[in-house]
Structure formats: C-alpha cells, structure tokens
Image (cartoon, rainbow over all chains, first blue to last red; front, side, top):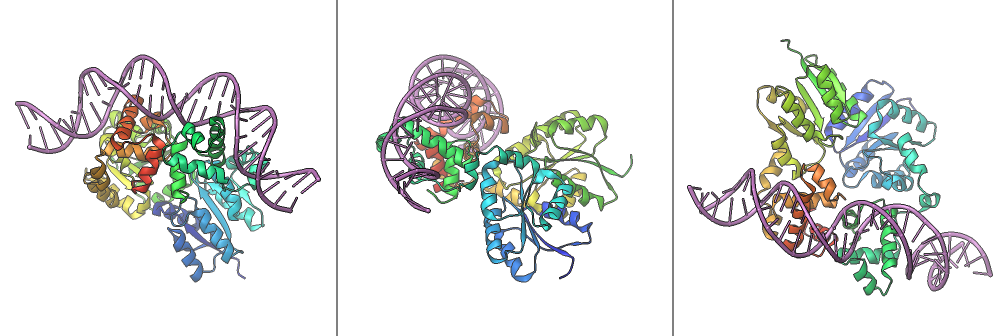
Length: 210
Length: 210
DNA sequence: TGAAAAATACCTATTTCTAGGTATTTTAAT
DNA sequence: ATTAAAATACCTAGAAATAGGTATTTTTCA
C-alpha cells in the first residue's frame, strides 16, 4: 500500500471543484483521482478508481451527499467520507450520523480546517466543524438516536396540511382537540428543523412523502 | 494607469475564497487586492483599495450580492461587478438587470468561463452564463405561468415560499416592501383558489413549478 | 410487566398570515 | 397615445401559526 492519499471530490459547481483541486495540488501526498458532479457519477468513479477519501457536497444532486455517502459505505466501507455543507443547519446533523460519514465540515471553514480534518480522520476518528459541533451539542440527547422518521400520526397530519386544511379542520377530521394538532405540527417542525409549514410542504414533496 | 487588474472577491465561504484566490494566482495580470465575507466588508474595502472588478456571491450576507452591487455602482461606477450564483434560478434575473452588474455567472461554470467573462466585460460588454440566458429567454412563455396566469413575480415569490421564507424575508431578498409581498401572496391564493400557503406549496410541487 | 414512544390535551404570548380594502407607478402592448 | 396588466405600497382587523411550556393517557415492544 502506498502513501499517496487518493481523493474524489464531488460538487455540482465546477468553480468549487477547481478551487479544491488547486488546494490539494499544493500537497504532493494527496492525489485527486476523480471528480464528480452528481451522486451517480461518484458511484461510477468508484468502479474505476481506488479511492481513500471522498469529499462530497451535501447539496449535490442525484442523489445528495448523504445518500451517496450511505451507498459508498455499503459498497466500500474502507473509504472515508467528508461531507461539506454550506449552512450551519442542524437539520442535517441527524443525517450525518446516519450516513456513516467521517467528517462534516462547513464550507465556511477554510482549507486549513479541511486538511486538519483529513489528518484526524486518517487516525480513524470523526471530525465535525466546531461551529457545527456547538449546534450539535444543543440538541436534546435522545434526538441523536432518532431518525428523520415521522410517526404515522404526524404523516397523516402532513398530508392533511398539504390539502390545505388548517389545524382546526384537521382536528375535526381526526376527531382530536385543536391543541393536539397544534402540538403535532410543532413536533414535526422541530423534528425536521424546518421553519414553517411552507417549507415542510416542500420537504414532504421532495422526499416523496406526499 | 497600469495593466494589472485589481480584483475584490466576496463570499461568505472561506473555502470558496481560497479556491478563487488560487485560480487567479496563476494569472500574473490579475491581483486580488481584497476579500470580504459580507457586503459591509466589501464597501469597507473600497475605501482602502482601488478595485477594478468585484466578484460577489449572490447569497452573501449583509447586504446581499445585488444590493452590494447597487452600492458599488453608486459610489464607484467605473468598477465592474460580477455576480456569482449557486443555482440556475430565474428568481434573480430581474435583480441582475436592476443591480447594474456586468456579469452573472453560475458557480457551476468553471474557471474558464469566469476568465472569459472578465475578458468580455473588460470590453464594456455584459456577460450572462449561457444556461442562465436560456432560462431567461424561456421565462416569458413559461407554461405554468400561462396555464395559471401567474406573473413572473408571483412565481418568484412562490419559489421563495417553498424555501421556507416568510413575507418579511422575501421582501428583503427582493428589495420590496413587506406589504407588496403580502399583496402578491394574496393575489396568488385568490387567482388559484387555494386556501393557504400549505396548499399552494402542494399545488406548486404537483404541477412541477418547484 | 416495565419502559419508551406516541398520542393526547392544555396554557400563554408573540408573530405571521389572511382577507377586506384602496391607490399609485411601471411596463407592455395595441 | 392610450389602455391594460403588472408591480408596487399602504391600512385595518381578525384568524391562524409558531414557540415556549407542562402533563396525562395509550400503545408498543423488549
């Protein structure tokens, strides 16, 4: 086994790929063996190249960073995955833990942090950007274990919201107190870290829930 | 006047700034004289440096790319501004034309296109990424808009609602009064005979608008 | 048979949405 | 040059959503 760390980089923005390439080109012990713009392209690259580290953008299309990460860890568990994220959103922290990624870094971070993270995860440890880590610690503990999965009741309510029902109408249809519906809605938004019902509807449609 | 083109780069993601810096460092006739992470920092830099080209991220905070561009063109009309955008969203095309920017480029584009754009706007012309241009041309005859007689502005607002923005946030992004956004939302719901924004989001997703 | 998860319900306070208006300015088209 | 459509902006008032709680009952499952 040779010493050269073989890297794949994936981001749908060419300019960002170009930047990453240049960053790594200054370090002779890193070699970028592949680049990709979609999750599918990432998986194709694994067929051709031996890859030690995959650096994935969280917002990459078809499939996204986390989904791609899961696929990688299934087929190539030895490969370490770094997820780059744009925003300091805890909406994805749970996904991070589920995905099997080794590092979760804000693009905000700077190249020093990226290189530092690679060192750390080469030792077999996980790395999370400090800013994200704070975010992560603020979440209630039992939330970590939890997945994105919604309860049947919550899904029911999301569907009724999609039909244009308000809390009161939902409560009548489900023979519940309006308070209960409000509580469920509150729980849903919290669980998914979404701002409001409009965003919830987008989320539900994008995930194919509705 | 010397030949060296003095560039300011602004983006709230350090990694992206690092990448841009490296891209330009390969070209001796470009000099990055300043970098910034917010609109305010951009304006401060103009106090200190003579700047020929400002490259701004559209999503930069306080104030955003377009607003910063307007400020620059007011105080330093000679400076050319390049707006970099993440997504191929027509929501911002209108802002582009109003802002006085000289180029509007997808981050997707690659460094060749960026350098090419700089050449073009040095001749005094404007540059828009080809993909964005198509988008722009398709805008007026949009099927969805036709079918449901929605205006471009209304579609813009629907998209921003889908991202979880409320009326106030939308007004900030589009440089409008909150009242105006509220009026648009009212007109949208009435026009489509929908009960509320949740139903509007379902509608928009089902029809493929979002 | 316990413990955990899910579902239920209530309370207060604040923010945002919705619905009813009116009205001016800009833009596009005839 | 005129008209229509689009975009802008303001006002009020009531409805609904959101955020912070607490707390009990029912289900599920190990």
